[in-house]
Each structure stands twice: as C-alpha cells, then as structure tokens.
Length: 233
Image (cartoon, rainbow, N blue to C red; front, side, top):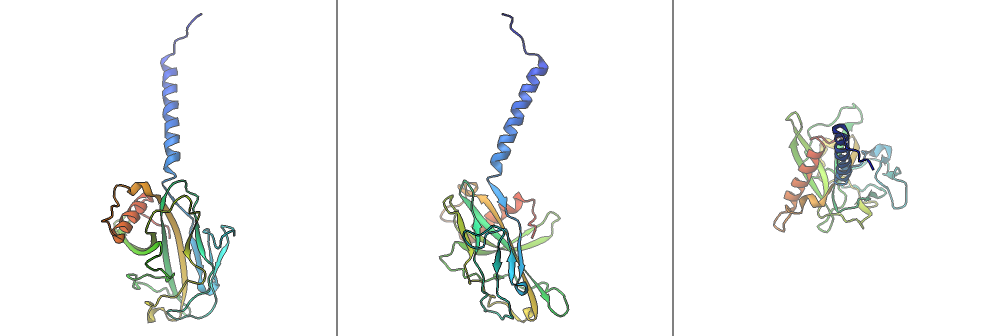
C-alpha cells in the first residue's frame, strides 16, 4: 500500500480551515454577551408608541403601546398598555433601557433644548422594590464631546427563566412632577431602546460593597464601549 505524503500547500489549507472554524465559533459565542433591540418611539399626541419590544403578553412583538390623547400637566397619568422586554437569552443578563424625551412647541415647531436631565425624565412608578433604577449616564462620544443619557438599568441580573420583564406597567406612565413651565404647550415624544449584556462580565467586579450607582456606571460604560461609544437614539 502506497502512503501519500501531505504537501506544504495541503497542510497550509488544513491549518487555515481550522483557524476559520475557530473564528466562526468564537464569533457566534460573542453574540450572546451583548445585544440590542431596535428603537421604540412614539408621541403622546399620536396616542401610541410604535415598538419592537412587546406590548402585553401574548401579543405580537411589533404591536403598539397605546397612550391616551389629551392635554396633560405634570403628575398626570397616561393610560398605557404595558411595555415588556422579551428575554430569549440563554444566559443571565443585565438590561438597560436607554430613553429620550423630546419636546417641540406646538405653535412654533421649535424644539426645547437644554432642559434639566438630572432628574428622571419619565415616571413609570419605580419604587425601592423595583428591578429598575433610573440612572443618568454621562460620557464622551468618539469625537470627545460630552454625551448624556437617561437609562433604566436592572438592579440585578435577569435569569433565563424570566421570559418577560415589565418596563412600564399598565396605566403606570405619568408626566413627572419635576417637569416645569418650560414644558408648557409642548408636544412630547418618547424614544426607548433596550440593550443587554452578559452578567458574567461583572462577576468579579460586583461585590456586596459596590453600590447601585457604581454598578450602573460600570454596566453602562461597558455597553457604551461595546457599541463604539454611540447610542443610536
């Protein structure tokens, strides 16, 4: 029986094939550690938020959150359907809902700029027992300019068994008490985008001595860096 020897070109092809296979495998694993949904948007005056997050258990992921029509003052409740995150992850994750509130004068069409974002811009009924923490994330973009994002961050990892996670309870959305006269006669637009990152990323960082503000800062910084220092919202 004649034994064939492998030539140098054949060996090189085998090595490259193995490296390509390893690259594909590691690329697939990475996708489980950070991900994002598409943006969620809507206007109070339009009476709905068009979302890719799920509005109500059992409904389509492309269904809407309905918000009541009308004229509102600070502290008023908005009749809304619940906003949920559908969790299909196969590992424990931290979730962040980056949100934005735009205000445009109904008469002039001029946007409201430089309003106070040091307090939460939406009121979704967060209590000490809530899984969410409303946090102001301040950083710099790729050009070195300061950026500021209000975000809802989970206080603990979300497990695989938690298929649905409520962001806004039914009829729980309110105009914040902190909104002042600058919001008078304004058309208000809400924009939400959800991000997730693997909880194992922070296993060695989050000891019992690390407070919630510090945890949010670490989580948001890591997510921000994963998405090239830009939240498309």
